[in-house]
Image 1 (cartoon, rainbow, N blue to C red):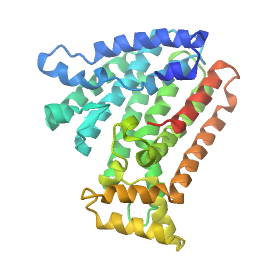
Image 2 (tube, rainbow, N blue to C red):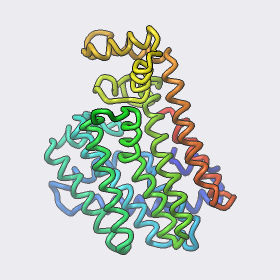
Image 3 (cartoon, rainbow, N blue to C red):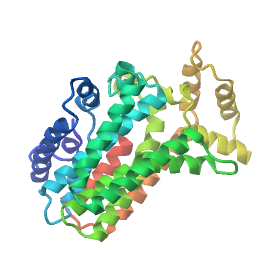
Length: 337
């Protein structure tokens, strides 16, 4: 089920409009990932063909409804730009993470090698840049600043918190850069490309950034609590890969404050020992975390970020679009995968 289908009944007028425009986006996206080279095409089109939630272009189409010309070609182009940028970042992420799977299929780096996957991602960034150039200097600047934040977020995650920096605050900053920035840009593009006001564009961008952070915090819960048949991932994959997550950061915070219980100490001890890929060590740690309060605290933190996102919509007129934006935010943290 697509995001649009999940927000509306099938006969809702807004759903029909957005659904038709999303088909235009998909057609343009399929064309954009083909570069006319027999060697390159299979790599550059790999992830687009695998599908995906299309959250970012859907948000662009939705926020465009707040402008006077939501059916403008610039709206479709903006939606394609944000999805191309997202896809390109996934190619690079999979190389950095040495990920064998993406969207339920072998990752590009697994199929074609690291160098080819990096170049495929670069080509998609180039395609996005070419499209955004047709949207004018302001859109080019927005794209460049968003791309910069994506890179800084990834770099900060790779390097880790600096001495004296709060690890939890660092983690939030990483999430805002890696995910929140592009969702914010997606919302802003929609309003601006439809001729909407600066005030509305800024409001939905602030909303989008917070939704992005909430989305990623919710992922930390999903990584532990969901069924592998639903997510396609082994529970605790982030723990296995040594990726910082909010539940473990909360445990560390409690330890630093002197309030960590015995169960939490045992979890951190196992994580410190490593070798989670041996025997049932990963399943044991996951089981212990599932019973610990930090998982519920993480879930509540995701909802706090959602509430903050919704507060940014105060100036958005009441109606179907605002209700859909509210539903979009809730869907990001209440999902199962």
